[in-house]
Image (cartoon, rainbow, N blue to C red):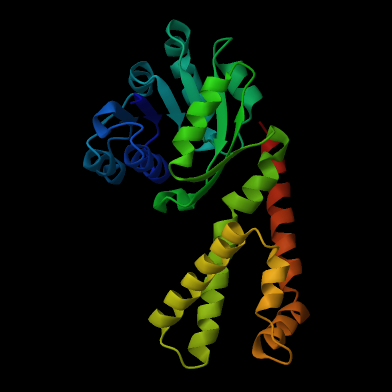
Length: 271
């Protein structure tokens, strides 16, 4: 059982806390989160888990053996100085999910030797279907990396990667749910146009996306082959695929990942 402090108590922090509890890695009463007094939703979310909240980042840092830095990236430079003394007095593991904040920035802002793991989860972690990657800092041990793996595997897929991959992964997995939500919405709109009630169209479109993704993961068959398997000669599927190709469907998605990656790189260069 791990004593975990959340510096920031937003939606992602709450999702992670739920996953950690469900996996038996911690308990609600063993977690503490820092929340603004005016953030009633976050406070209530942690209270429902049996966790306390405080308006003090140093208090959270002092409490937790593992700290999850779960604040917006522009807030990080303001918060790190508050945490310094806690890391100086006792060796703690910092897991940072702050988007675009590099290991170098984190390590330069905290006492020498602080073990840090940079983590990039995505929003489906809220329902236990996240896609998370992590990068260990120069002072993070194999044991620290194992803790990160265990914790974030509790809310979905978790893989270790080099930090150079973080920007394109953010563009793919971090931003990717938004692309898929648009696909679901557009497919449902098409079905409504052709006569389906909207509720049914959304249910079928979302289940279709879920099922297709699960097949790619579970079968390890190339998605192109799976596409061919449902494309009968002169059938409706191959006709639809032709229409998608004429309208630049694949190129649009490739452009989206490229554009998002470049934006992440632009953000990272401003650190």
